[in-house]
Amino acid sequence: MSDNVPLDIQIGIIKLLPIKSLIRFRQVSKSWKSLIDSSEFIANYHFSNAPLQHHVLVRYVDSEYETYNSIVDDDDNFLLNKTPLIVPSDVGLLGKFPNIIGTSQGVLCLCVVPQISVDFTPFSSETNTFVLWNPTIRKSVRIVMPNALNNLEFQTVVGFGVCPRTNDPKLVKITYNSSWLIKPEECIPSQVEIFNLSSGCWRTLSKNVPRKTIKPTWNQVCIDKFIYWVATDRTCVGQTIHTKSLILSFDITTEEFADIELPNNLAYVYNGFLHLFKLQTSLVVFETKYTETQEEYCVWRMEHGVPNSFTKLFLIKSPLESLQIEKVHDFRKTGEPIIEMFFDYSYVQNAIFVYEPKSEEINDTGIAGGGYECLAKSYIETLLLLDQ
Image (tube, rainbow, N blue to C red; front, side, top):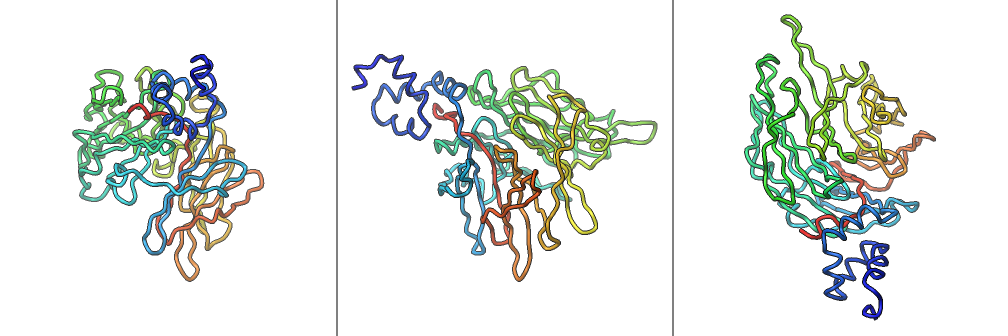
């Protein structure tokens, strides 16, 4: 029947179909498979299809140390529709608890982030392996990062984002002087390497690298064409070294770095207490605050992309002394934070909750682990990686 319908009309109809239907239709005919698998169709579908479906990837470990992965539809029936998810072998090679260091345009980037210890645990075969994963189409790509450092003198961090102009996933590797014993002016310039999935190789960025006094962390987020990291800047005034927190940004399209100054009430907060997230189209900073009885999160949003223009949105407090906030995982598309909380009655358990800023209610999702770390990460449906 499709032979009687002009190709341009077929393409117009196919673009309006959900991804699950497209994956099935690839099996119908060779011409449809060739069309759907083409880079042009993937790019046009991603940027023109509306509305894009939002999901949350959920992972938890039960008391028997069994790991469960599910996809949750982020819609009006949130958490009512959970689909078991089979993790690809590439992700399995990273171990039971790989870190999702970033998401961009429906693609997740996973790795094993090295733990900072007294002896600075070196990178291993797992910690310099990254996996780009599109759970919607069950496609993954493994990437090896060369020359990663994690010692007393140097530290390597990585950022991830998909270029909105070329549809090309990128990894940005930054290696810098990590020793706090070295004076700022004696640090060597940061070394930056970039990996483009389309080329499959790493290349060195020779200019416009971050200032040598800046120390970025693994805490990063990608929003539109920018990757942002929480970072520390060190300056020397006389014999005294001053430090302050800031945000380092990288424009994926122009491959240029820039600094984003934080207001004083955030700039002098230890960078380990600051975490970056994407709230719809905005950059937000979660500030961890400790009181005598509980841990709180203060949420700040950068207004209209203007540096130093952060506005306080709301404060999240633990509702009970026995129920403590463990971490913030992400946001729902409605703007509600997804948080992990820890409670201990007769046994230890971690559970996922959703915080409603307007009502200030913290609602249990029914997703709980047996005292082990949970995970909840938002992403959109996309065809990216289908042609890889």
